Amino acid sequence: MAASLWRSVFGGSTSAAEEEGGVPFWSNPERAGWLTKQGEYIKTWRRRWFVLKQGKLFWFKDSHVTRASTPRGVIPVASCLTVKGAEDVLNRPFAFEISTRAETMYFIADTEKEKEEWINSIGRSIVQHSRALADAEVVDYESTKRTAKAPDSDQI
Image 1 (cartoon, helix red, strand yellow):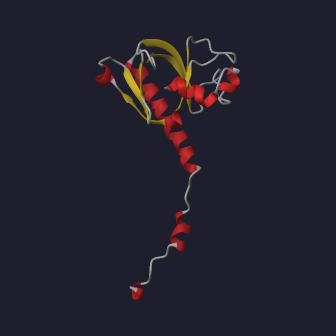
Image 2: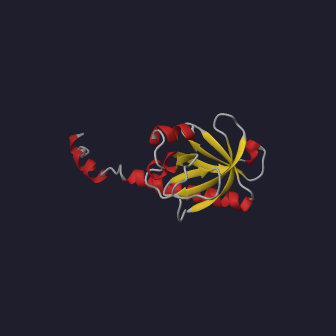
Image 3: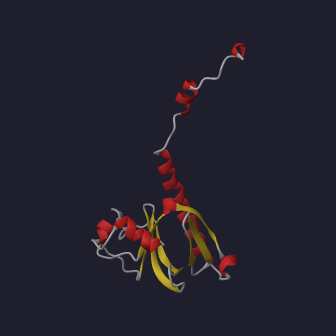
């Protein structure tokens, strides 16, 4: 799903700089490291290099990420609803999940500490980027109150 989301959002093959929506994933990530990710169609586990930057979680085949690198996929964190531990679901240590309305994706970190750091980093990013969306949809309740004034008690 995330790969198809990537294709639907960014289209066919263009340069990496255009495809990632202007996010310079090759420098100063908020978090980067190896995770094992379950495949989208064939549910095999593959080790991938992940980069969290500016509200997007990218993954690559190797850790040498440059401007010319092409992400294997991306998850816009604003579309994520939850990120939480999933050891009980997968029966594997250091597992966690990221859920969107459309799907739940599973990941495995190398250690408990790394799992917690990824969950915290992704969780912070979800809050920051969902807040940015919410701020764009602010409703002025004060003006709504004035226009929808309740009747006076002597009118009832």
